[in-house]
Amino acid sequence: MTAAVYPGSFDPITNGHMDIVTRALALFDKLIIAVYEKPDKRLLFSLEERVEMVQKAVVDLPNVCVQSYSCLTVDFIRQIKGKAMIRGLRMNSDFEQEFEMALMNKKLAPDIELVCLMADSGYQFLSSSSIKEVAKLGGCLEGMVPEHVAEALREKFFLKAARFSTLERR
Ligand code: ADP
Image (tube, rainbow, N blue to C red; front, side, top):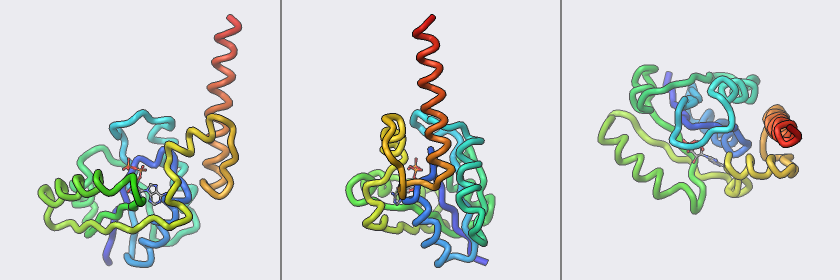
């Protein structure tokens, strides 16, 4: 059984990520979505929240499981005996960074192959950060994230706004 790992921050998971998940599943017997605990960026959701949202999103997909990790991605892939790492590539934003990371990973773990899937044209514009920006300003997220993610984003920003206005009133 050939297993692949799709690592990322998933803060939160979007339909662009989901497109990569379903396409990777057509290539591999098993897919492990690996949620990285502490990426070098400001997070909106906790690790538990990110994992839970990914789990809900893939609940109907066979041969997919979700795990969190905090070590080097290649070490995690070795631990679970994975053969390949999956990444999604959007036209302008990802290539340089992914290429640099791929060379480093190849140096660290020559036995693990990188499989990059081109983002679907319908999701090229989609990123977790743009989703958060739209949600923060109350924009419509239809077709961009699973419904439970849209709900979690609304809740997060609504609660933040409510807390802020309480503080302002004091
Ligand atoms: P990371 O912090 O590791 O980049 P992300 O959660 O932002 O984590 O992304 C995980 C992977 O999914 C990356 O390879 C990223 O390029 C890819 N990805 C993000 N958004 C999209 C999208 N809209 N379409 C296809 N791939 C995407």
